[in-house]
Structures are given as C-alpha cells and as structure tokens.
Length: 302
Image 1: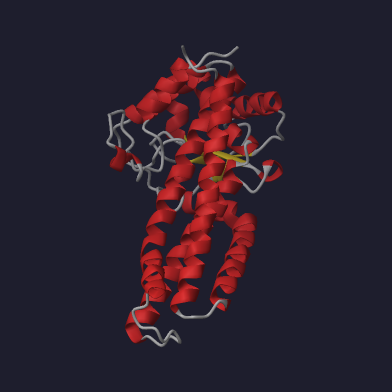
Image 2: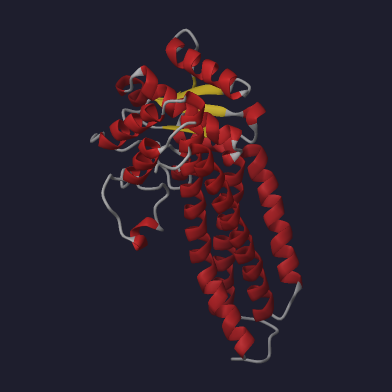
C-alpha cells in the first residue's frame, strides 16, 4: 500500500533531525580532537564560539551571497505575471508571506529558495524552467520551494553549510600548523589519545560533508511531500522533475558547488534517473530523481 503523505512528511522530519544531531556531535568531537592533540581544552571552546559567530553571519547574509553567486535578478510583475500569480496563490494557500521573486537568465530549467525566514524569503527560477513547464508542473515546483521556506529548510541548510566550511578550514589550519612546522604542548608523542585525536581530525571533514549531503537529500524528500500536500496534485511535481532531468542542454552558468544543494535539481546534471549504488548516493546533493518521482507517484492524499 502506498505510503500516506502525512506519514512520509513526519518520517523525513525525524530523519533530518537525527542527522543534524549526529552532525553536531561530529563538530564537537572535532574540536575535542584538536584540543587533545595540542593539550589545550581552550581550543574546543574557541572552535564552538567561532562556529556560532559564523552561523550568525550566515543567518543574516547568506541569501544575498546566494543571489550574487547565481546571478539572479529581481523579477518585474508585469514581465512575469503568470509566475507572480502562481507564487502569490500558493503562498496564500500555504499561509506564507509573499516571497520576493527572482529570475535567472539560464536555459537550464531549475529553481531554488533562500532567505533567513519566511518574512525575508526569496524564490528564484530560471527562464528555461518557465519555458518548458505547464501550469500544473510550475505549481508543483513553486510549491516545493515554498515548502522549503515553510519548513525552515533554508536556515537549516545555511547552518550546516557554514559548519561544514568551518570544519574544513580548521582541518586545513591544523595540518598546516602540525606538519608544516609543528609546535604543540602535548608531550606524549604517540599516546593512544593523540592517535585517536589525529584520526578524528582526518575523518571529521569527510564525515561532515557526507552528513551535509544526507541532510540536503532528506530535506528534498520533505519538500517534495510538503509541496504535493500543498497543491493536492503530486503528479505536477513528478512530471516537472522528469522534464528538468531530461533537459540535455548546457549546465547552468551560475552553477556553484557552494549553492548546488539549494536547487530543486542538481545543477551539474549528475542526478539522472538511473539506479545508483549506496556509495554513489552518499555523495549526491540530491536524492536520485527516480526515487523522488516514485515516492510522489506512490503517495496518497487522504
């Protein structure tokens, strides 16, 4: 029997917060590992404090950075009237404030949402998306993006991206200092705690990146089910995903690894509707389209 859409939505929320908890544990262990290696517990406190400051910065300025990276421009209502009315009607249905609408001059069909909260939200689409989608398909995509806003996915993704970047920076500094001209206070040389700490420092950036991608994939499943609930027509989004994935033209000029996870479909086009191994899946920014479409077409709205 097909899964009930509400149950699917609840399950995705639980999975996401479990992944977030694991991610925060990785962050703490990384700070602990560096502090053990240098025999200085103050490093752990500094790392946690600095990560909080980076999150505050990311919270206030991430949307502006994303719009600049992607080259999105504020859309005029008279020029994109159908897009405006679609967003407006669905925002009212979802009980959300009207987000700002941006358009990217890109042939590749895609869309994303950004903003620190629902009062300062942005929905952006490419011109290529507007050209190939029918009305109910566009509604499915917009409902998906509005669900990201309503579920506060954008804030969650921003926090995760900032923390992953922070771990990577710390790891880079650690190796430069330790092996470029090491000067640490730990006297035990090859003690077991030092070895464990070193292993954790090496593995933490990899684990953090894998967790970031896992959280991104879970939020896409959640936005799919929430969007289908909003439109009451899962087939619209399923059909849109098929068209987006089947596009065979050039990749987006504004595609960037830093923001790839925000788009409804991977802008680098390695998200094909083919069966992937477990090891391939864990390094994807998005769930395989085949799985997303199957879940949408298998859901029942009651």
